[in-house]
Amino acid sequence: MKKQLNVAMMAAITAAALLAAACFRHSATATDYFPFKQGMTWTLRFSASTGSSGELKITNLAPSKLYGYAVIAQENTGGARSYREYYSDDGAGIRHVAIETPQGLRSRIEDHAYVIKNPIRVGTVWREVERTLDGTIFDAKTMIESTSDRVSVPAGTFTGCVRVRSTGTASPVKHAGGVGRTGEDAIEVEDYYWLAPGVGPVKATHQEVSGEGETAQSIGISLELERLQK
Image (cartoon, rainbow, N blue to C red):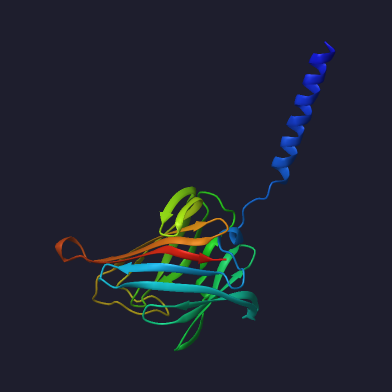
């Protein structure tokens, strides 16, 4: 009886310890999937349905302040142009604050654009303003579809990835503040991207389709992580 009692007590203690560990286990947040570490560099291979391809290098720069937000700047080099993008962990998620090109700095605060939002779980959804490749503004619906994808790219295989899907239609009707498409076909846009814990972006696809049937035109772009420097 004493032996059975001791076994029962040990089992109870073990169960209590496991429960406590579960209660205090770190809950994943947006920054786990989009690291802000200064100097961290991603090299991605991009390819387009038009036949163009090459490398895109993204490097985290020093933290700074912009439009009242604590931001991290990312230097993007490769492809047709170099530019900087500014991101902030504003508590709700990783917010896209601004983009800086040779033409100047453009705020994205009013776009309510996020790379990823909390809570990190399937079904988290948000609305944002996005742009097609030709600059047409449209309203997009973005949602976390999975938190357990396995993604294989040239840099390796990553597990526990978040898969995000964003869709929208750029209408021929002029969008307030945007580029009008009067007399042209609407553009259907679909984006997918995958973020790995502790790594960040590992894969992304972008698809634009305009028109229908035999006259439909499509443009596709894909990116895959080749190298990561932490």
